[in-house]
Length: 174
Image (tube, rainbow, N blue to C red; front, side, top):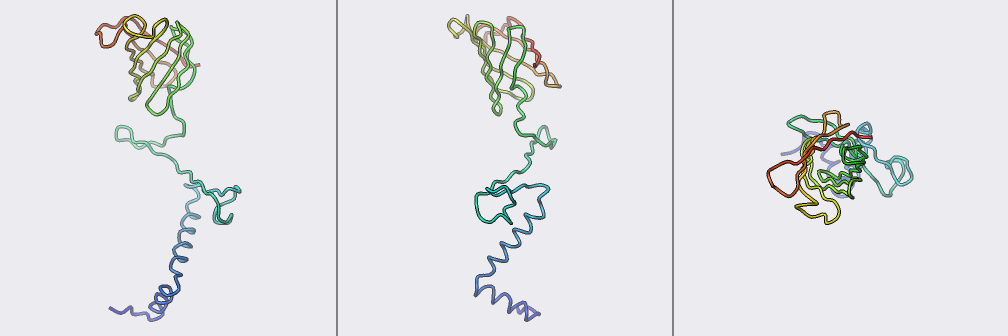
């Protein structure tokens, strides 16, 4: 089948012979990137836009999106609600969250917590001196964060999977 416009056919032949099709694609790509600057920021190593800054390392920042229970919400970088300092009934606590993994320390008996977050609930183990071992110095813990992210309540027990909860845990974020 012949293309009705002979000038276009000649243009295609010229592009195929000279390799300029790659140049046309590169220009179109640059135009698309330049047109999307409100969504994507692409600086070069000199801090000016990559299109005018010339070759060099390029970084791309794109807003993240998280799907939670069928709802699409934007995620801000570093959203790790358990991270930070807390005042609890077991002393001052320092939490560090990385993804769904959480570690914490607390002042009472050199205490430690390790756990996994699912939704607003942290499920894991606590341990403390002298042995950091169950059944006397370690056990299960389940902590549930309030909707506002500024407090949590929970339960703890001596030993692992013993069935009986021995006490409560409460804290407010500082």
